Length: 616
Image 1 (cartoon, rainbow, N blue to C red):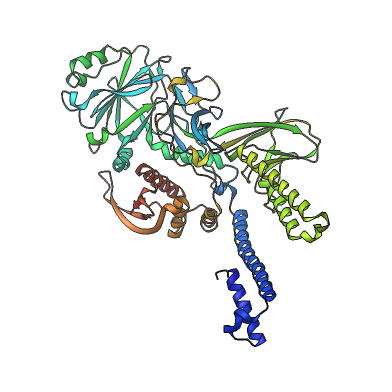
Image 2 (tube, rainbow, N blue to C red; image 1 turned 90 degrees about the horizontal axis):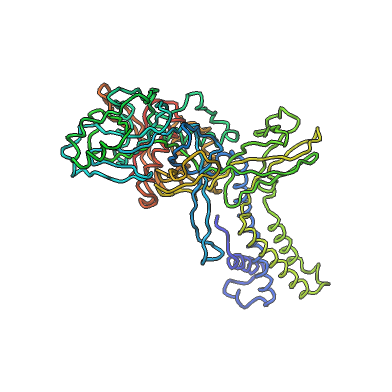
């Protein structure tokens, strides 16, 4: 039912009064005394306010219930992700959580349009990948030769300069080994620009044959890490493993792009073999230039026949690459007091991801309690959000505004102070609150959902200093950082600063869910419990994944032909998505969303039938 306006309420009251007092509708305008009309007008206004408050309270109650019942991790911000390249200073460097990289971006200052704000976006690795001193020099493709000079890619020989076509399904990678002479944990990153052929290319990439100096190499799809380093986390443990689940998802998303050489080769006594195919392929001048370069080892890659020159011409290849997500490791500290301590975690304009560690000055780690688990230690800590998670969501400024409105509504109680005195002082209080709000917005305190760490030392009297480390992210703001953007090292000297470069656009970042978006997340957790069993589970997951970008979802049975010779037709589950607006995202972003959704469904589904995402 739609709420009535003040005039509609007044009209109904007048008609009801006229009927009781014996007047007809025609005489309503002039029959009543003006004071009666005024009283009806005031009463109608108050009834309208009550009606609006009832409708608002229904909305607030629904939002509050959804907010309480939705798991915290489902409503948190999601970091953007991408591929970063870094060249180590030592012979081998293993990435860890303390390796932080950042890029600076200029943004307009909303409080001063003339000046710009320089903001840092931090990224960190998702796996303990090993980087080594193997520097890429050349990539030979059917459409030309790319040379890497000072960490920049440029074409040195174009396709029209070739004396003949390259062998079918063959490319070469030339690199210089600048390490200790042992070729170990060599890993390459491949990216295909052609969107329509990506599924086929990444399917056959692990089946390609690799040769180094005419010696066959053993390869595997994925990263150069041990399987024991790949941790699998329970999907139900939302709060404990939130950032680890995000990292695991990013690793699964990019894993097909990487190929690792499993062999350990000694290159100290090996003379690099120059590919004999180049003698009849390159012009004489360019051939001599490449031949004269010393210590370049050539890897020959032969793909199956279905991968032709048109696909191989769209390849981008590099090494010493690894997945990164938008995360920043923050540090804060405070004194430990008796009984109960509350430590606000500063976010500025960022979003909270997860606690990293809580230690005292004796290096003792405190248990962080989640999901009402009984603490193992008598001293423990737990997180609360938004005003230490009280049920009254109003902050201090809103409480003061409520008090001011209450004073105005009950002005009679303050009549002895004089109306001018009351009004002037209330205006002054409003101005002070406005200055507070402006300052809070400038320093980033406008987020009502700030986290607080509460340390309980009730049974023992702990003293000293508490050191807190926690992860934050920029959410959607860190999306669309352009490929080949230069990065910097935040801490340490393990990498060549000129080699840090982003090789893919950053995508997948999302801000904390709004109240309307939390409803989809709540339905997903309530109905499917992070699993995909029925078609309705797929529809709910699609709505949560795309939001307003799609308007219709259809699930149908389909069929496809297999890529391999021994596989014929296979049944599929086809998901047809009708776009709200084709220009809502770019083509690359639509492709990213479909691949990301497909990965989510495959991880959560219990059947083995392949899924296909089809846009309409």
